[in-house]
Amino acid sequence: MRSLFEPRSFRDGRVQVYGCSPGCLIVSLLASVILTIILNVILNLF
Image 1 (cartoon, rainbow, N blue to C red):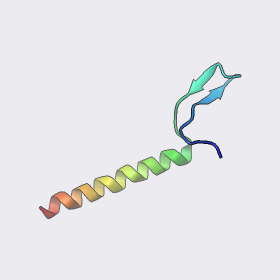
Image 2: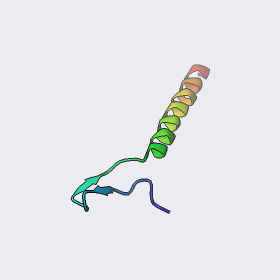
Image 3: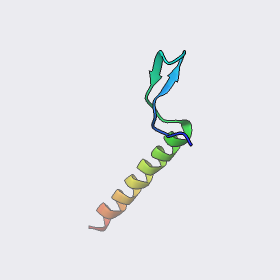
């Protein structure tokens, strides 16, 4: 199984792109939204 965070190479390895696959991007976006909501709830409780 390929790693989500490994560099992707294009044009016979001359171009390397460090980035997420679309699935990884969606997961990280969801994680940041959920963490923001949790942080807001905690701050509103105190």
